[in-house]
Image (cartoon, rainbow, N blue to C red; front, side, top):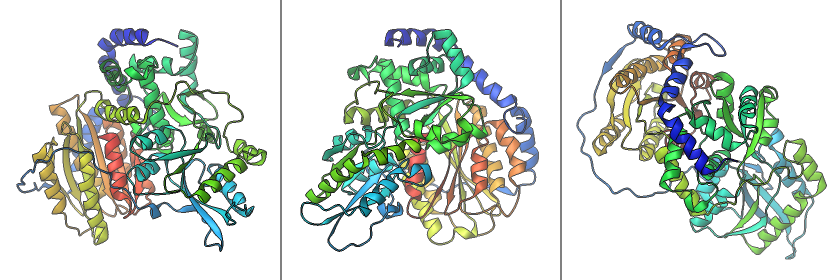
Length: 572
């Protein structure tokens, strides 16, 4: 394991060349072939875009003047979806004489198929009709919620389950730091580990050069520009949060007192120079790797890795960080009978039948990996997230355009909720980043040119959102074309800026250009196109986002504000 001193020395020698290496990597990705169609150059993409725009009905329609109202920044609760928007994966119903205990459980164990271990365990436990000391019958209601979202609901008092079983301990420590009282029921329901997944040729090269492959070697490789890495949002993903803390631990030489020091945060910023993509979920990361192929390494839980057919050859899994042992905690709302229920379930789940089932679904047998460092305090973890938010763009200014669907199908609650989501989401945007707004229906209108998101620009943005009205068809790809040109013009002013496009739509394109017209242009320009399907599960949106590493999500009325805020928090 390399010391912080040696890593810091490597940083000093590598930083002089990191910008050149990053630029070379970007140029190579823009001009060479990848899986699928050949990637055209940026120059050719720009030329094709110019020709395509001749057929697009578009105009500038700038928003009127707006007054900025300065407000002091304060930490506020995120715009969270209602708990009911996350369905119960085990619902015991109403049972006379029963004590029902609701548990929030992480998705890799509370879903379907190989992700359904806890569903099966809870179902069998309920069927056993376990009798509690007060004479009631134990029943568990299981709600499947990603660990980061469950933490938000619990920490901000908007979700009050009796129990919580996240993937790892980190979320519990953070909840405790925000005043949530917990009681440990079981340190481990099923064993799992977080890992770095890398191409086999990368793993062999590191072994040949350094004798072993671990997180220290991978971090050093990324800093020196030898590898391009991606990981998941540390505000939402257990693996992403674990990875962030693990990287900081490497730079701090596993000394929590130095974890947030200026030297360590500077090292994190250098590391981020070769991180082109932060995915919101492991599945988004996996799909991006499969479709784009430009990432050399990314993060994933072992249980997901062993159940992903496309990763069974040509990739290596290297464990890192703290274990993902899926602990079970009772929360302050739990009654004595509910605590007794969870204790009985923990014993049931630890039995040979349930553990064999867990192993068949990819969870660990035994304990081959020990946590690499003690779990930091909850307040340290909260501060680490804040530092990541500040340093994740490695000093680059982001230039982003929001492209909003104002077609007739957005009439009613959809446009109302979309407006509310955009108004909530802008709180996550740093003032140093430049933001613009383009809208489309049958034609395309640029209502706000990108500019630094000062109080005045934010006021203009909110005024433009408030004035949105709907009607007409859906010319989404025409809107993408216009937005790409807006971003391209901004890049001429600042070539070092980091461009992004966010598309918000509720329906299939029925006017103007189509996917095949824009696909080679997006690939060639290398501009990420993040998509939000509003009450729409559109395959084409995923295809658009997969052209360059970007996220694609679907959202409904209840959770669109939360999902847009979460996406902007990770990307902006």
